[in-house]
Amino acid sequence: MNKNFKDWFTEKNDLHKNKVRAFFHEREVWFASVGANIGFEQDGKHERFLRPVVIVKKFNNEVCWSVPTTKKDKKGKYYFKFEYKEGEFTIAVLSQLRLIDSKRLDYKIGVMKETDFIEMKKRLTSFMI
Image: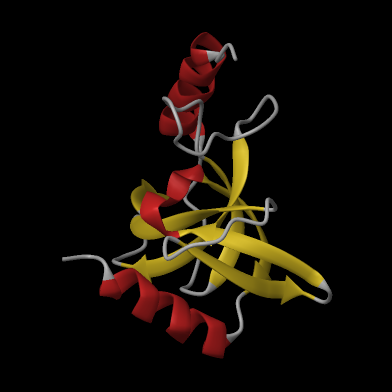
Protein backbone atom coordinates (compact mmCIF):
# COMPACT_ATOMS: atom_id res chain seq x y z
CA MET A 1 0.00 0.00 0.00
CA ASN A 2 1.36 3.40 -0.96
CA LYS A 3 1.46 6.07 1.72
CA ASN A 4 0.94 9.73 0.95
CA PHE A 5 3.78 11.21 3.01
CA LYS A 6 4.04 14.32 0.84
CA ASP A 7 0.42 15.38 1.49
CA TRP A 8 0.79 14.49 5.18
CA PHE A 9 3.84 16.75 5.47
CA THR A 10 1.83 19.64 3.96
CA GLU A 11 -1.05 19.04 6.39
CA LYS A 12 1.32 18.65 9.35
CA ASN A 13 3.08 21.91 8.48
CA ASP A 14 -0.29 23.70 8.30
CA LEU A 15 -1.34 22.28 11.70
CA HIS A 16 1.93 23.42 13.25
CA LYS A 17 1.73 26.96 11.87
CA ASN A 18 -1.99 27.74 11.84
CA LYS A 19 -4.05 25.46 14.08
CA VAL A 20 -5.45 26.77 17.35
CA ARG A 21 -5.18 24.29 20.19
CA ALA A 22 -8.37 22.49 21.14
CA PHE A 23 -9.79 22.52 24.68
CA PHE A 24 -10.01 18.89 25.77
CA HIS A 25 -10.40 16.55 28.77
CA GLU A 26 -9.46 13.00 29.66
CA ARG A 27 -11.96 10.29 28.54
CA GLU A 28 -13.00 12.27 25.48
CA VAL A 29 -12.91 10.72 22.01
CA TRP A 30 -11.69 13.08 19.30
CA PHE A 31 -10.92 12.93 15.63
CA ALA A 32 -7.22 13.80 15.50
CA SER A 33 -4.78 14.34 12.64
CA VAL A 34 -2.46 11.42 13.35
CA GLY A 35 -0.90 11.39 9.90
CA ALA A 36 0.52 8.95 7.42
CA ASN A 37 2.58 6.59 9.57
CA ILE A 38 5.11 3.85 9.01
CA GLY A 39 4.40 0.11 8.88
CA PHE A 40 1.68 -1.07 11.25
CA GLU A 41 1.19 2.25 13.05
CA GLN A 42 -2.42 3.46 12.83
CA ASP A 43 -2.84 5.95 9.99
CA GLY A 44 -5.24 8.82 9.70
CA LYS A 45 -7.62 8.78 6.75
CA HIS A 46 -8.66 11.10 3.95
CA GLU A 47 -7.15 14.49 3.15
CA ARG A 48 -6.75 15.54 6.81
CA PHE A 49 -5.36 12.18 8.01
CA LEU A 50 -7.93 11.91 10.81
CA ARG A 51 -8.48 8.99 13.16
CA PRO A 52 -10.49 8.75 16.39
CA VAL A 53 -8.37 8.78 19.54
CA VAL A 54 -9.14 8.54 23.25
CA ILE A 55 -7.55 11.16 25.50
CA VAL A 56 -5.84 9.08 28.21
CA LYS A 57 -3.88 11.70 30.17
CA LYS A 58 -3.94 15.48 29.94
CA PHE A 59 -0.60 16.94 31.02
CA ASN A 60 -1.52 20.57 30.27
CA ASN A 61 -3.48 22.50 27.65
CA GLU A 62 -0.85 21.71 25.01
CA VAL A 63 -0.14 17.97 25.18
CA CYS A 64 -1.75 14.68 26.13
CA TRP A 65 -1.38 10.95 25.83
CA SER A 66 -3.84 9.50 23.35
CA VAL A 67 -4.69 6.04 22.08
CA PRO A 68 -5.87 5.56 18.48
CA THR A 69 -8.99 3.52 17.86
CA THR A 70 -10.27 1.21 15.14
CA LYS A 71 -13.61 -0.34 14.21
CA LYS A 72 -11.92 -3.65 13.33
CA ASP A 73 -12.70 -6.26 15.99
CA LYS A 74 -9.22 -6.99 17.32
CA LYS A 75 -8.60 -9.16 20.36
CA GLY A 76 -5.70 -9.54 22.78
CA LYS A 77 -4.12 -7.77 25.70
CA TYR A 78 -3.14 -4.74 23.61
CA TYR A 79 -6.73 -3.99 22.55
CA PHE A 80 -9.62 -2.65 24.60
CA LYS A 81 -13.22 -2.82 23.37
CA PHE A 82 -15.60 -0.10 24.52
CA GLU A 83 -18.80 1.69 23.54
CA TYR A 84 -19.15 5.46 23.52
CA LYS A 85 -22.07 5.58 21.07
CA GLU A 86 -25.16 3.44 21.69
CA GLY A 87 -24.74 0.07 19.99
CA GLU A 88 -21.41 0.97 18.35
CA PHE A 89 -18.25 -0.70 19.60
CA THR A 90 -14.76 0.71 19.15
CA ILE A 91 -11.38 -0.86 19.83
CA ALA A 92 -8.62 1.18 21.51
CA VAL A 93 -5.18 0.10 20.23
CA LEU A 94 -3.37 0.29 23.58
CA SER A 95 0.07 -0.58 22.17
CA GLN A 96 0.02 2.68 20.19
CA LEU A 97 -0.27 5.08 23.13
CA ARG A 98 1.42 8.31 22.09
CA LEU A 99 2.00 11.89 23.13
CA ILE A 100 0.26 14.38 20.85
CA ASP A 101 -0.03 18.14 20.73
CA SER A 102 -3.59 19.42 21.12
CA LYS A 103 -3.19 21.13 17.73
CA ARG A 104 -3.75 17.66 16.26
CA LEU A 105 -7.24 17.46 17.81
CA ASP A 106 -9.90 18.38 15.27
CA TYR A 107 -13.32 17.75 16.81
CA LYS A 108 -14.82 15.83 19.72
CA ILE A 109 -17.08 12.89 18.86
CA GLY A 110 -17.88 11.44 22.27
CA VAL A 111 -16.90 10.59 25.82
CA MET A 112 -15.85 7.19 27.11
CA LYS A 113 -17.83 5.80 30.06
CA GLU A 114 -15.93 6.30 33.31
CA THR A 115 -15.97 2.56 34.16
CA ASP A 116 -14.49 1.70 30.75
CA PHE A 117 -11.90 4.45 31.10
CA ILE A 118 -10.74 3.15 34.50
CA GLU A 119 -10.48 -0.39 33.11
CA MET A 120 -8.59 0.79 30.02
CA LYS A 121 -6.06 2.67 32.18
CA LYS A 122 -5.54 -0.47 34.30
CA ARG A 123 -4.86 -2.45 31.13
CA LEU A 124 -2.44 0.22 29.88
CA THR A 125 -0.46 0.30 33.12
CA SER A 126 -0.35 -3.51 33.31
CA PHE A 127 2.07 -3.72 30.40
CA MET A 128 3.93 -0.42 30.73
CA ILE A 129 6.90 -1.88 32.59
